[in-house]
Image (tube, rainbow, N blue to C red; front, side, top):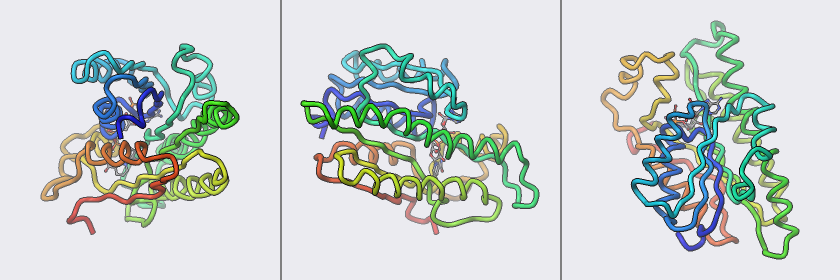
Amino acid sequence: MGKRLEGKTILITGASSGIGRSIAQEFARTSPTSLKLIITARRIDTLKEVASAIEKEVGSGVKVLPVKLDVSQPQEVANLIPSLPEEFRDIDILVNNAGLVKGVDQAPDIKAEDMNVMWATNVTGLINMTQAVLPIFKKKLNGADGGRGDIINIGSIAGREGYPGGSIYCATKAAVRTFTDALRKELIATRIRVIEVDPGQVETEFSVVRFYGDKSKADAVYKGVEPLTPDDIAEVVVFAAGRRENVVIADTLIFPNHQV
Ligand code: NDP
């Protein structure tokens, strides 16, 4: 599998913590000699720590570029590719992982600010990132080297079913799901693969963000349950990316054994 990923340039959003951080680490572990990883998020200092951790674990064969990026800001997304150093611009794999949930309010009480940040990040941000990278993939299709590209979107079990207090988050992830499905069909005659991975409960900073930074409330979410780890999701993402070209692991739901 590592061989198929050799030499790839991989762009990951939301790589400063949780699932995105683990995805970056897992790619580096799987193909430690020749990858280029562009790790992005808003917290640049944390991204630099992730880059150091990767280098410490696998050595300097993987080139890691931390880039500050807020996917909810269309202009930042539009500026991203032209601002990358030349050697990082030929992206092969985009992992649209950045996402968040804010609040646990029932639908009538949802704050406009929370609703807007969820849509702008989880949906518009993901679509804008996809639009920024697709021209690179399409150019590869016309090239002599047989290049292509993978788009890997991190959805959620919440995109398949609603839960009380999560209506907007669930709606954003349902939008990711249908966008991904339509995109896959639009690109079906190309060698561009469109992949969705939908996690169930995973222990990350996700719930800390949901409760506006209140860690004790976040910890209570996991009381008495055994959530997945970010590595569980990362392994699935890297496995899907490492399949031979004609194999698309299009749609995966992965959740803890006890989760209803
Ligand atoms: P974390 O909170 O640990 O990670 C979220 C990541 O997204 C962080 O790196 C954060 O970085 C980044 N991020 C948030 N907003 C933005 C933004 N506007 N621009 C750029 N980056 C942003 O949570 P998870 O790792 O759990 O979440 C990753 C993905 O997995 C999300 O899409 C989430 O919806 C999904 N998911 C999570 C589940 C879970 O139970 N944990 C279950 C199902 C799906 P920074 O703050 O530095 O910008």
